[in-house]
Image (cartoon, rainbow over all chains, first blue to last red; front, side):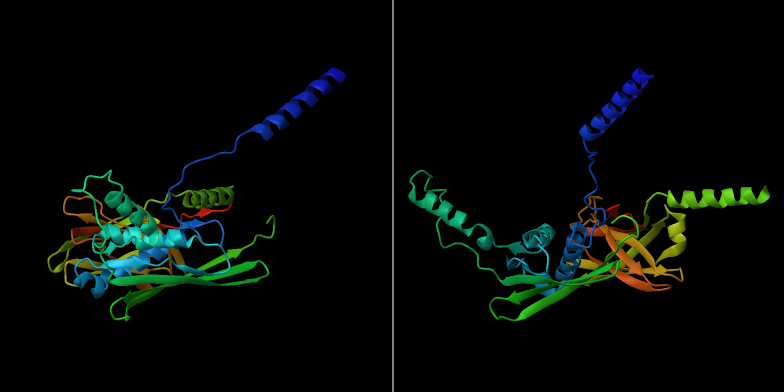
Length: 198
Length: 142
């Protein structure tokens, strides 16, 4: 009887240990799927903002009448109470607009130091063939300045949590200083904690 | 016994409804020189087709007329709120997808409400688009 109990005990322990050692289940998901894991800013919010802003910008006469204007993008300001990678929001909007072929973007706010180093290397190092070396003074000045900010209002009462995000974007004519286009996207997210568990 | 069978049938129907897939209903729209050329609705989810219906489609040129934007009216036939997901996919004359934003967007309509959903063509070479709607299919924390 004692032996049976011992074997049973060893079996249960082995099962428990193997359970602890098992690897977590990992799977690939669709990056385009709607995500509502938490009320914090997520991938779907980013996609919704990019969709609204690019749709609105692509339809504005300012960009469609001028011949592929050059835009300077300033990183989106985060005025919410949570950490948001605003560069990825800016990048998403920029790449979406760039793919449309209707606008061009200057990279001076992103990699200007690297561009200047490369220009110096090409013109002064003596390593680069002078026929192909690029010289300073040929960068194209931006026509428009694109900037935005994201803010939020967070409220919770009892088991309900409500978050309201507001994303605003503006397009300014650098020459005149006039805001030629502005739009906003509002997002409301709610979470209700279950009675049992979390 | 008869009542039990009835209950089992109802339970099976509820389970079948819960287990239903997320195949979208698709509105195929071809744009012509003057705007809308043709449209066709593809029903893959008959329950959703009874809840959300595609209404009027409008296409208008943007800016200098080199590109266009489209609006599709979606009507909630239910008397209660309906949450769903939608997306627009744009194509060129060769049938190549040229969309720049392709993620599913969550949306909601109040009872009997209808609203226009707008999408701008990503380029001047766009000639057709699909407007897709499907049931909510979110990645949740549970």
